[in-house]
Amino acid sequence: TKTLEETLREVIPPKQEQLKKLKAEHAQTVVGDVKVENIIGGMRGIKAMLWEASVLDPIEGIRFHGMSIPECREVLPPAPGGKEMTPESMLWLLMTGKVPTPQQSQQLSAELAEKGELPSFVEKLVDSFPKTLHPMTQLSMGVAALNHDSAFQAAYERGVKKTEYWAPTLEDCINLVAKLPSLAARIYRNVYYPDRPLVPIDRNLDLTGNYSNMLGFGNNENMTEYLRLYIALHGDHEGGNASAHTSHLVGSTLADPYLAYSAALNALAGPLHGLANQEVLRWQIAMQKEIGDTITHDNIKEYLWRTLKSGRVVPGYGHGVLRNPDPRFVALQDFCKTRPDLQASPTIQLVQQTAEVAPEVLKEHGKTKNPYPNVDAASGCVLYHYGLTEFKYYTVIFGVSRALGAVTQLVWARALGLPIERPKSYSMDALEKLIKN
Ligand code: FCX
Image 1 (cartoon, helix red, strand yellow):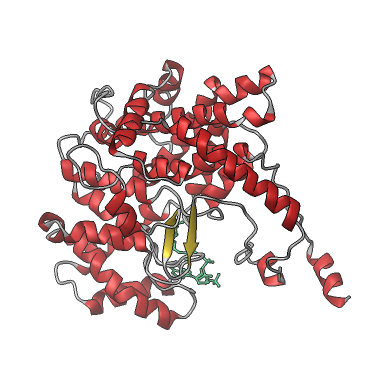
Image 2: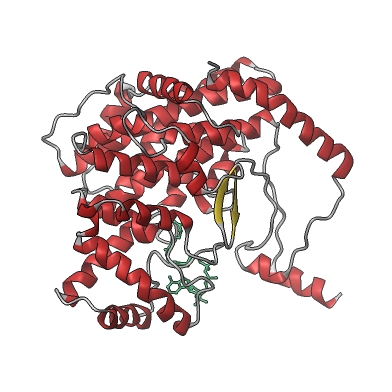
């Protein structure tokens, strides 16, 4: 069976040819136009990035190399003994456009386990952080520090040829994905359970099996399966979302993958992006407290209106691109529906009931273009039910996941020789002048 690198060596040359042809034959073809509303509206609606692995349709949601989430859950290999697709299988699909065999997926698991330990200076660095430092800040700083051993940076200093950039980039990317669980679990232990010893990596386990173990949930197979699904699902959401775009932009300067992904994590830490899953749980628990035991659609509605009238957004609802319920939300709900213990959980019930009421309220409120739940509306409640109750940590799990898409693009950007990103900008005066002419 071919390794990930061997498979990439096969799939990269035809893609390089495809790009060459596009450049040579269609560089001047117009594919869209830019309106003032795009410029003042955060570039929404402008299709101006090259992103191979996933496309987000406003109605259907995300597809990974053309495959929907239900299709991915069907065909991507699970961990031995499990049912859910693993992040390794998703990474393989994103990188190569091919569904890995179970052996290939397991081979990648073994490689990640082998490379999973942190350098001791990073352990010391993370252990020195105050417990009060937000876990996302800790993750970003830990990831940035990993660039001490960057293969890309070393190769660049040696003067490696441009056509060879992608191989050391891949080496860094695999190392980064491998080390994220140890780093993320260490942060969890330090912040919430400082007296608990850290479990070492088990070479026979998959990436998430190890992560779950290190977080202290190794004996809860349901939690481990949920984490596999969660991490695989959040892996990529096409190019323009803030974290993926940040990684792409920083990577385009030839900063190494650790620096690029550290920057992405800072974007993910914003409340309108990844931090929303921390906010959702905080908000749902506050709702639960206020409503008490008799939860009805009417009192959820009232609570929603109170949130909106106080000028806040309803966390977990709305989206920059999607105009339908997020299929990632649907997949996580589906996971809950197959497990009676989750169905009986009051927090999960409240999330489900909120999803039944909120779209109508948000439509009546009339502001958001998408009144439906996004993935963050559901992702935290299962973690909470299984005992991972520290909301501030939730975005870190998102951060472990989003690396899958980010590193895929870093490898491909180097393989395709994409240039440094440099869009042009307008001032308002310049726009007015342009309009008058
Ligand atoms: N509750 C209340 N108002 C909302 C809203 C919500 N959930 N979603 C959007 N709106 C408001 C916006 O604040 C904006 O108001 P304004 O005109 O006064 O500025 C108006 O509706 C139009 O916004 P819209 O174009 O629909 O949405 P944007 O593309 O600007 O923003 C996000 C998209 C996701 C940022 C927005 O819907 C939001 O703030 N949602 C809540 C936070 C959240 O769940 N974020 C996670 C998103 C995602 F899944 C992820 O990245 O993880």
